[in-house]
Image 1 (cartoon, one colour):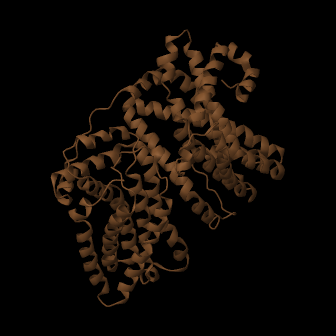
Image 2: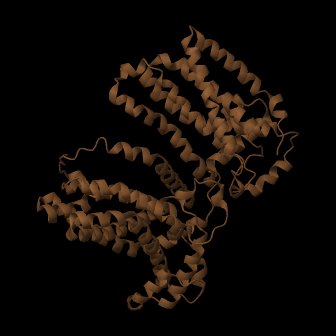
Length: 544
């Protein structure tokens, strides 16, 4: 195994670990194995990449992704430079930094913090619990060091050359305490969930944080660009008791106290909290460590069976014509609900489809009133929702449990038509319609009741577009292929399908120019939907 540079540097602290009662040689061997295994792990921030990332690559992919985290650090630089209102500036800096670090900690390092292999494998060997716990903590610290270093390196250098050595040293020390606080908060959060819930709830939480991180990387660029337009450098911060619960303000306070000489009682209390809380938290974590290790065993336990949804059964009976179609509707609905890897790859797209129209409206609301917007045709921006349809339909063929696809061979079906039709309807009901309905509420508020026919037109167009995307994309049974084999050779097809949204927008616009045209267009769309969703169309579908 490779003798990693981090382990060579760790050797200088050998005496410290030995004084703490840790068997350093064994701990080093454990870390060497862990770091070697980490070469196979792909960071969550790269899970939205194309199929090329599925090929085997040499080296630690997390370390190779640090340049992307470094870009987040650039966002912090303007807040450091804007002035000397440090309580405001550094509160923003630490808010952004803590969000990025903590979400990355939960999404990428949960497998380290929640690793129960140490308990099941190492404790059967002559290895002390203290050595095992030390190896786990050092493993997390190593990666947190690289993550924090990549994010904060540029802001630290900028602060050194523009604000001086004192500012730099305060900044550096506080970053260390922030990391300590984040590690403990994350561990205590897991302990709380495991104390009252099962391991399934914890894994769901981790999955949602991974989704949030992926979505943040997609939407963040637009939000950051627009954020500089409404920052008021001369803003005045009113101190109050509830701010005691805001850690970013704790770590901004020392700058205000030491550099600006403000000795307000709140400033001094914030400063004390910045150092006392992390130290108290780590002491609490050490005392609760035995309980945490015991509760980790819940991760190996299987959750009880999920209750079937009576409401879902009623919907299936309403929208599915026969029992076979209803069966695969419920099957696809369950897979989309429980398949974590599928949710991680698909749900960020749903969030993007919801956010993009709002971003498109942002600039217009700066120059127009609500009444002026209601008289425009900006409601056509809701067609952005259709962007997710081809991508998700393509993803419906992939699953982390694809080996269970043998069930299709055992099912008494003559042709795959009911499978595809039930799955597409489950996608529309489970994933597309919730996003679309939320958009309708926003657009209805802006454009009033007059927009209802237009919203119905978009909905019917989305149903037509769904079938067209399905017919033009490569066919495979739902959830029957591995994600590692996915998305190859379909990029051009997806691009063509996205261009097809243009004709829908154009026809909608033209129909709105003709008296009663929108209602005629609705009738035509109903007829087209009746034809495309007919069983005869799906019977002709052949699997590639």
